[in-house]
Amino acid sequence: MTVCFHVSSPLIPAPFAFAYHQHQLLSSQPSFIQCALTKQGHRFLSTLSVKAGDSSAAHKLIGKFVAASPKSISLNALSHLLSPDTTHPHLTSHSLLLYSRIKEASWFEFNPKLVAALAALLDKHGRYNESEALISEAVSKLDRHRELAMFYCNLVESHSKQSSTHGFDSCYTQLYQLLCSSSSVYVKRRAFESMVSGLCTMDRPSEGESLMEEMRGNGLKPSVFEFRSLMYAYGRIGLLSDMLRIVHQMEDEGLVIDTICSNMVLSSYGAHNDLPQMVSWLQKMKTSTIPFSIRTYNTVLNACPTISAMLQDLRNNIPLSMDELHGTLKGDEALLVKELEGSQVLEEAMVWDSMEVKLDLHGMHLGSAYFIMLQWIEEMRSRFSLNNDGKPVVPAEVVVVCGSGKHSNVRGVSPVKTMIKEMMVRMKSPMRIDRKNAGCLIAKGKSVKDWLC
Image (cartoon, rainbow, N blue to C red):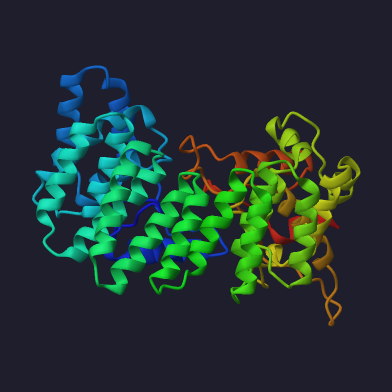
């Protein structure tokens, strides 16, 4: 049986969790490895929401769900509740009971990372005794020094993601003691990585930077991971000069300023409404041949107040061409949009051959999907031209993949699909919802060509 988990899932086995997190950070595209809450899990949590006020009924429902569900479904539901980004925060108080029932299942295997995530959640809600009991139970099962250190790395990371100061400080102290008593280079590096990252997640980058210097003193060279953590933390809390200082430090040490770093810088400027600096950074990316990504588009277009305001209410007469959009935007917003044009992002999101033209909008926020759609229509109009043989280049089918809302805040409701459908109706396009796949709009190639040309 194949089981897939959310990026922030506490269920990834501990030895691989950090490498997995590094992989996600290094990817210039959003991750699509993640799984949303399953349909069974969604039904269970919806029912639990109704019965949450009745303790006896909730207990029976949880027991029945675990007894009737395979391992993957049960763990997916628990992982969803333990995630800091859960869409069911009102049900997180039931996580311990769900975990207890899962422990009774014949297929259950002890997972330190899962325990760490649950302990952090309990600590966040002030259930300190229950949190400490879980940690003590886990510690008693871990014999090797390395296993114990990895468990405390998981605890530090989990507490930081939950913004739980009480639990973070306690586990940080324990991990530091384990680091000092270890002769293993691997343990020392992992401990420093977790502590620096945790401090940065807790918005304490100056402490993280001091710890990174201590790391050097222990003969360990900081990696791009620590530098990125510091850079983004400084930027997130508005210390933009310190953010740039870390960027320059990275350059001095020969580390590449890539798309990931650039997106972090852009996100920091955007969060503090510094649009002129966003324009300058995009220009620097072009000069340095740093490729844009979908996240670049998301970050930049989310920072454009005019575009965001327009798309909040689709009853507005939003611009339906690039020329109309240029006429609507002023000042720095117009410059930002201009800088995005001509990148390879559209090309990467598009497939074009004789059988099919497909545009995949997965991973795009509303502003990005809107902007890419306008670009795509222009590109389509341009390509629907004569080839060298003098014959029209007309693919058999045109498809726009919007998604059906599996990853949306409200399951089954896709804001991107709603927007694209509204745009197509207003433009009198032949594109319609695919009967076989509700997450796609589809039309015959000839109909689209006749519409555009």
